Length: 149
Image (cartoon, rainbow, N blue to C red):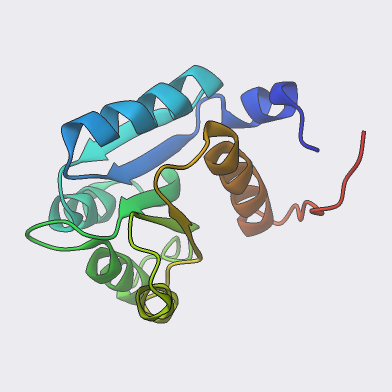
């Protein structure tokens, strides 16, 4: 199991792009990520999130967390645009968040470049561990799922 200290040390100073159209859900996500040490940049839809990503310095964001169902541009389309961008950080970890558990929706997300999907309501520990493992792997430090302490 990954310890709280490992997550806090890892998260400190890392930037996460959050796309969430519901302000209350965005506040909940921020209240889970920021105390762990993440800097959260919030976008109200996928288009805004994509624009923020494109305008940021390469490798500014360690991960992209997106609601899948949003107005203007949904999370799947935003993820697809990030993946199709010519930036060398277009492979950053992308986590989809949804209240929908239909298999077809999960498969669609996988086809757009989303690495994984978690279902609302999710536990704080689930998102923090996903970020830890996914970002470490993306950066070249693979973390085994079966660690024990």
